[in-house]
Amino acid sequence: PPVRDLESLRVVISAGGTREPLDPVRFLGNRSSGKQGVAFARAALARGAEVTLVAAHLDPGLETPGIRVIPVQTASELALAVESVAELADVVVMAAAVADYRPATVAESKIKKDGQGGGLVLHLVENPDILAALTRARRPGQIIVGFAAETAPTRDELLELGRAKAARKKADLLVVNVVGWAAGFGSDDNTVVVLAGDGSIVAEAAGTKRAVADAVLDEVVALRG
Ligand code: PMT
Image (cartoon, rainbow, N blue to C red):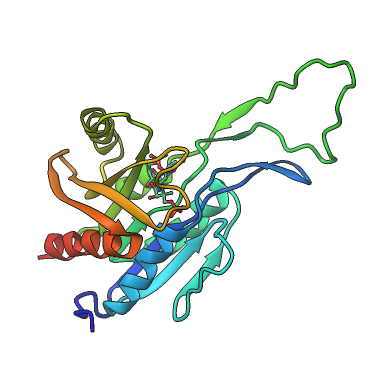
């Protein structure tokens, strides 16, 4: 049985991909399945934590018994939900794939083709950075884990992008993973480099998303001392 080294800690995890509506029937989304975030939730639960999962769209069939789930659709909803539960959390893990942009307006009825063969230009506006807001509001002792999903072709470029994100978002730990057509999103396995707030490498892990989650939680436990 796993060591209950997160006993009675409040752990908040975001998982899945946000969906930004364009009109009543369409959205801008991404291919996050929620598997990595759900793996964190299950791992934290097994280690004794009280887990809240803020779930943007998850693949069907991802069971979360024993876990309080708050379903959300958009980045704005995810921000509200995470911020309300993060206040009392000891650990926050932002594994969700959050839309950086949303349509500036949501059409009230289905957007129609103009029939002229011209294109359609969408006007997008930036969403707030939830992770950066969480680290700005961090309570003493609270540990905030962010992710960096990058399409970098080499390890050096991956680390460079990860370090830039670590500096911007100021998480205690930043889990850097490669994503692309065939990696990261939707897969059962993942390969990650875990950076400290100063960009130094504290761990590397590869294997099932559950194994990756446990390796990152080991670093959370180490940080708590
Ligand atoms: O769900 P799976 O199919 O299992 O795939 C897992 C995963 C690839 C989605 C996951 O491992 C992962 O990388 N999640 C983060 C995806 C992401 O949005 O990365 P990013 O590099 O764009 O964002 C960096 C960090 O900022 C993330 O912690 C993200 O949650 C957060 N963020 C991003 C935008 C925003 N507006 N607010 C945020 O808080």
